Image (cartoon, rainbow, N blue to C red; front, side):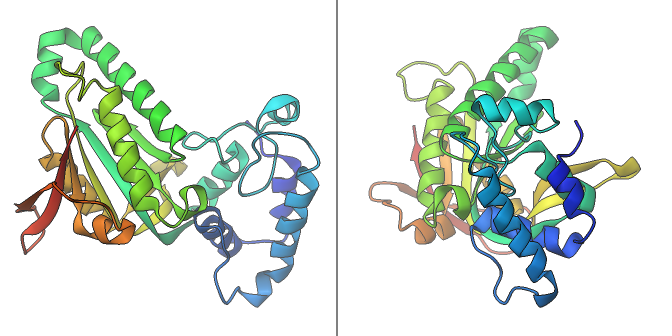
Length: 285
């Protein structure tokens, strides 16, 4: 799909630096302080753009540019080349394409969920390629639904893994608490905690920290929206250690969200690439 006319217009007088700033605003809900003086006029235009698009009724507008996404006016802009982005219904495809084109991003504090299907290799062998495809397809569909309902950015659906990002703009400052509730939803929707075997065994890690969220380039101009940094690596490692039906919660998430950990098992883990044992809380669903 092509870019909207407003996005094409913006490209005449703003640069990558501004897209980095707007991406930070998109994730956090406030501008960097101090805001670069040379980009002041572009910010004024963005604010005007939001006010302009707000006159077109829609129960959801793009959080970055303001374009209507749902309803009659959402369909009008979809006809002109706009649509919900691939990883969040709160962002339009034109803004996502701009982020990808300019390879922009921002370092933000957030909470992440990494969730993996446990024992996927023997599961694939027992079900065969088509049967395994059906299970993984259902896994993606069901987990994406509950994560989006909790206002997560579904960062990646890959192999047997789902990655969800909980940023302040969408879920508030207590993103750790929201992420933990979403992790519990994720396990329940995959059949855990129902008194019988889950239809797919899943374990999850929850971690809070500062990470880079944005576009990363690859060969031939291909880009993807990624979460990078030691915090993301930590969450991935926690997920890999979680047994089916378990959520491993980092102490950083406990502190950030002031989470209620009464009665939860404390476990010390040896993680690859981490010099000291890592203490986590274990929640079973």
